[in-house]
Image (cartoon, rainbow, N blue to C red):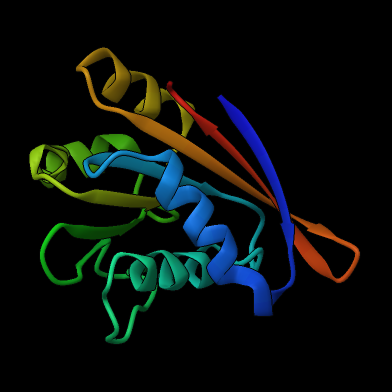
Length: 139
């Protein structure tokens, strides 16, 4: 299923709510877009939609952040799949909850789908002073 939402930064909570309604409680969400597209900003809004009110920061150097119960955030920009697997982080996807992945590639998505994980891709692109969020889910 594909849904497109256009929104300004002030309307980001509406985008997060659309995603929350489209994605089950346990899923891997691939957040994709160019540098400074707003992937981490969207992750903050998604965390708020799940009831998490504390700081959400990009896990660029730590690779993984865990926010409360059932909310995980990964940044694979400097971490190729082989390194990610060697670190043992692939197993963390088995934990129930949302796993938000910045810079995750299609190879990782296909691997997870092949193991029965529900995945969604949110492609972020600039659009007339705001952003366009193209949400593609497995179902």
